[in-house]
Length: 112
Length: 116
Image (cartoon, rainbow over all chains, first blue to last red; front, side, top):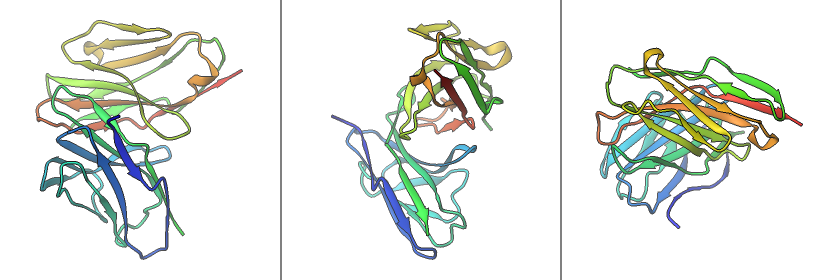
């Protein structure tokens, strides 16, 4: 079945370390997105990519980096510059203007 | 810039009550899409509905119904005869259709608790 796979489901990192969250899709979708969710804040856009080798900052990109070397993959790196990285991270993809959005099951990152 | 406001933060009802979740949006585009998603405790987002800005017909799907009113920029969601399984966080979202792949802007979500 087609879908989006996010791994791992739970991730712990020590303060000051970089960590990379994986997002893979087999839906042949052009666009991919990363959202961050905090309690009471809804989902906020971190980065998005409309085509391979191109991506744009969202509303809260500081302290994060991404790459889009393959259509299927859009990994998110949470760097040590991110002041408050503990959150739930959701990856999504879409096929285009009239298409819907498909979400992964999320990665819960905790900084210890 | 686009914006979605869900003024209600938490709602608690007793099973079998009807409940309406409010959503107000702002956009300068004439063409856009509105969405509702459900997020159960497991965390994944469950798609409920997508409505484009040219279709103002209300929609009913089982116990769920949606009221889209462009005049008030609202897209409200009603659950009839609520059940405990409806307990979740519900998000309203907006996508402007100008770009080929437009990003979704979410409201802050409404936590619905349905008590037995």
